Structures are given as structure tokens and as C-alpha cells.
Image 1 (cartoon, helix red, strand yellow):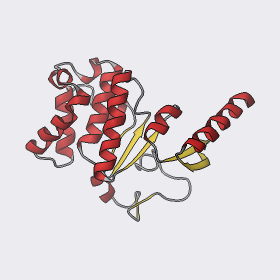
Image 2 (tube, helix red, strand yellow; image 1 turned 135 degrees about the vertical axis):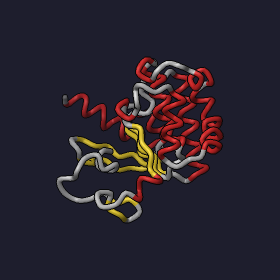
Image 3 (cartoon, rainbow, N blue to C red; image 1 turned 90 degrees about the vertical axis):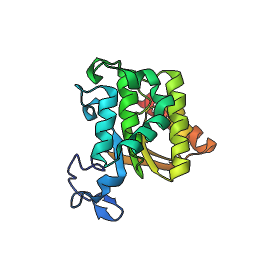
Image 4 (spheres, rainbow, N blue to C red; image 1 turned 120 degrees about the vertical axis):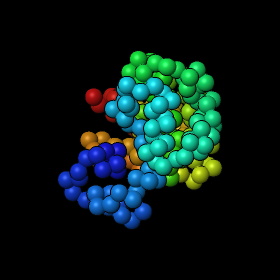
Amino acid sequence: MGLVLDLVAPTEGQVLLDGQDVRHTTAWKRHTAAYLDESFLIPFLTPREYLTFVGQVYGLDEATCRERLEALAPFLEPALLAERKYLRDLSAGNRQRVGLAAALLVQPRLLVLDEPFEHLDPAARRQLRQFLLDYRERSGATILFTSHNLEEVFGLARRVLVMEEGRIVRDVFAADKTRAELEAYFAMEAKNT
């Protein structure tokens, strides 16, 4: 994910978005959003201040930002948007919600998420999964996400890549047969360790 977002320089090869090397252009940033971890947050801002800031960085006017935040309200919960606490003082789950909402706020064509369901309670996990499915269907966006939980993967993914030590060892389209194959693969891996 660091390579895709030009956070890490490749030792070989290149990452192309829309046919352009991410190392040589910044055009891809206008239609790409990500939330990898809490380092993406600004800890001394409130949730609303942070989300407003992200909207401004992406050139959203105040009305558009407000409209999009209203659409995200079921996931964020009104109390979180009204919260006067700084991000650093929120629970891990609420920080996760704010970071994910910031990435969704910009309505990107490419959304990159690392363990997006981590720290979320079961209700928030369901909300996020449905929100991501609806967003993908409505926008046609590509959602690239990591997870160690096959339940989450098969609840959202169309295509599954299994990686070991930075190399792709499986590249399959999500289906019931594929799920059984991957469960058997991971069971064998666990047995061998």
C-alpha cells in the first residue's frame, strides 16, 4: 500500500495509476484517498475540524463538505461530529471511524484502506461494509484493502490476493469455492508453522 501511495520507493518496478508512474506525477492524488493508520490523523484537531481540513485539501467547498458529511453521519454518528475532544483523546474505534470517513469524504476513484474493520464494534463493521459496498456500486471506485479476516474479505472483495513476504502467492476472484480453497490454504499454513 505504501508503494501505491508513493510512501515507499520501489526497489524495482513501478506503480502505475491511470498509466502514470506515481513517482513522477501527483495527478493521481486528486482521485485517490487512503486511511492506513492513525498517523493519517492530526491529533490536536476535533473530528469535525479534521474532516473539514481534509475536505479543504481536496478542494471541496463548504456546502459540498457539509452534504458529504451528512451522508456519512450514520457511520460517524452525530455525537462524534459534535465531539469537542481532540482526535488523540478519542477511543481507537472512533479514531478509526474518523479516518475512514475522511477517506470516503473525498469520494475517490481509488480508496486504499489498511485493516479498515480494526477497532470497530460489530454494528460499525456492518455499517462500514454496507457503506463501502454501496459506494463501490454507486461510484465504480476501486477499493484496495487489507484484512486478516476472511469473513471481512468475502463480505466485500471481488478479487483476493494472498501475499507472503511481499509476494503474491494467490490471485483469485471471490466465490464460495475460492473461500473454501483459501480456508484450506490457511489451515495448511497454520499447521506448517
